[in-house]
Length: 257
Image (cartoon, rainbow, N blue to C red; front, side, top):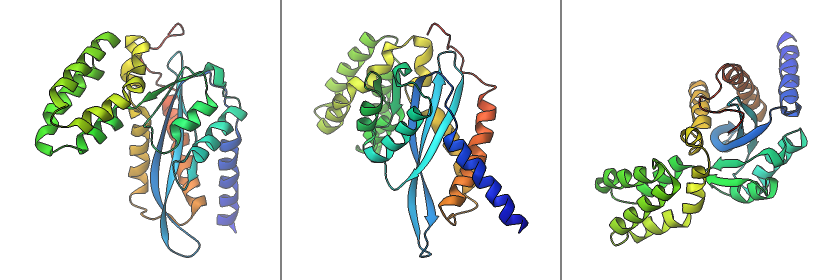
């Protein structure tokens, strides 16, 4: 009876977290998904994705705003999470940049929820995918060329670095260059921001760090018993994470940025 009562209290807290008002004046939004193994009612394990939204204000304060379980990273699943955030107080007109990996329907969902925001593609995800498509012996050389693009001092310098990369690699790996060229506009979106902000916002690494801690906590458990147990464990970790983040605003951000 005691366990049941405590579990019910925890479920109420989890529900309250998902319903709470979003008071942060979010200017930059990072989106990413983490896959977990969950046991269904039939006793068989299946994969579910935890979709997460990480908000950053102009002064560098940050918070993992919410998470939601889904069967896939579809436009509908991402749209449901984003509409929930907006309905609870997130101002869509205040969001300047949304950074994500572009998987599934995420770009479509972002365009519908934040029509005036710029979509920025995560460099970490894109570089990883590009390098996976070429032989291992060539990856170090290709990585140097890609780094010259995203570490450039200005957008103009980044475009020049891209053309050098394209000239060096187009003949050997035309698909590699074509894939980079297709996403170049969204990859270079971060260069429209002040230089001090780019390292934090050219990737979704901030939210990936949160996922690494969550995975570390979930690994000893293995397959989780059901969807509610996933929510309870994530709630505890996300609450703890947000307490830490509230004391560690990002350096380089100011109200004028």
